[in-house]
Length: 422
Image (cartoon, rainbow, N blue to C red; front, side):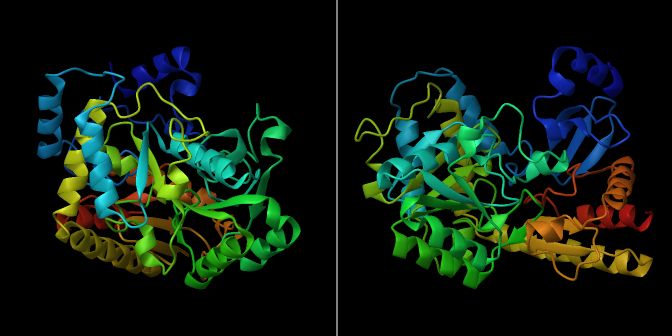
């Protein structure tokens, strides 16, 4: 079966033919490639076409596809069993490694996804503080938990959906929305509800409205507001953790979060997530404390094995991050040069191996409102052209593209060559 036949049949058995909305290429006049295999910086579809991959499974494949060390470790673990639902040495090994090598992580709880990590961290913050309200930021996407689907980015923004059907008003009544990189909006909320706010949750490097880094002063003032009001600060590092630096985006700021959420890269491509933070907060989780959270597959031995192999390899090879920065900077330079020569208005935001090309007249893209000025028709033209030229990109103006350690000069030139034909 070819790409088209598979996708048409998929639409009969899965809503929209997919298990996550962005994969459907909604709004684009084309059938999405059905991916069969990957190796290094490349993926191949069911029609046999090769693509240079700048999606990387939406971030997890920092080591590239089919990393030999990760695959071999998983094969060895498969000889023991797929799952136990019981304590294992592997989950201890990964938890201990994270606590020893990451900043501000005294204890950690394993889960199965980024959504599960963020929703659990918010529950923990509410239980710890005895408060109900949280502050999130417009354009930040923290998963599909009901309480987060207000002014969210990612697929919600791509689809033009203000929230989501099926979310009761009561589920979002305690979610307060501030503007990213606008401290006045945060102060106004604290002035009105300060003693009711359990936590502020933020992507320190937003990736779901396109890549936007929080400004230093903005982050410092949020920390101060949390401290003065007895609220917790949660960094959502599901996307930026282990990517912009091994220790994540918090290394970019002189700010310490109380809780941090992880996923994507930490599972090496397997479904994995975690949340961690100060010991006195984490010990409030059941069975040590009164805040209940559980998961049958949490700490799965195969997933833990992939996580251990991935994180140890990243931690022991700091040169990987230097190379990703080198080729990320080269890619950014090439794109700017080519589009400027063509007279196509654009702006590029990049943080290490995360990057978004915005088709906009704005001189800078720093807020959700800035993002919404983008020329979607121009993006669709660009995306369709690049895909036909063998460059696999996120099918949305509002997402990040990702580099892996397997991207080099050949892959950057391949991207540039395709873009010159636009």
